[in-house]
Image 1 (tube, one colour):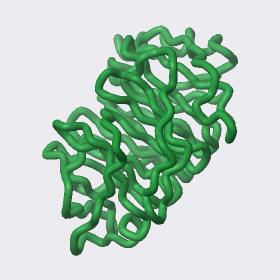
Image 2 (cartoon, rainbow, N blue to C red):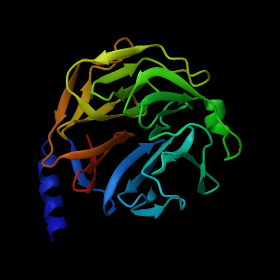
Image 3 (cartoon, rainbow, N blue to C red):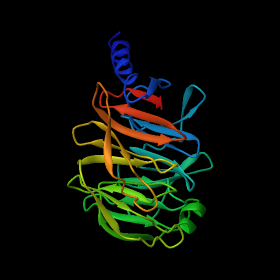
Image 4 (cartoon, rainbow, N blue to C red):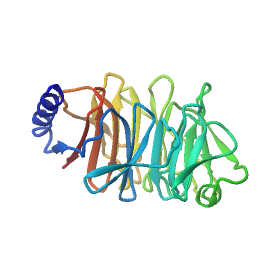
Length: 261
């Protein structure tokens, strides 16, 4: 009953927040993280089990224990508790030989980006490696000259990241073929613990206080946008993802919601 009451409270508040219409997502108990891309939705729970959504049901994704999972043009990737990157190959995750990664993102134009554990150095994996990796042989990651604790890319307007001091940065473009970076632009304003980029270039962030924001004013000429707009919620937020005009939200109490504008 407590879970039902919590959902009713959250959804009631969301229904009036900037025209976002929210409903309970297909039930995934103890959700920790969610990622949406190329029409798919994947998630992990606190027990490091990965799932994918089909219709109204969640199904286990492989058998490998993962703390973070991501889906995009380069496939489905994840990171394990031991910070090993994995790629989904023939229905199960294969460990990616090479550098350890605490978080990876597959939402770009074919490249995969990631953040190293301990030193938080940001790296990029060229699409030639990312698209064709089958679990055999090593891969070569390219250092991107930035320390980040969270990293996300989209097909439009570049990649966004959050550094160890919660400052937000955006790179106008990271080449999928060479991983060459156009340089970093500091995004003024709020400190964030994570940001996610949607397929259409929309950017959402979760602040260090657990509040949800959408970045507005983003364009090809101004990829950093012009400001943050609060998306009011009644509960603190853990993680967020956005794809095909649908917002996916995980609260710190492990509830999973979906919203449309």
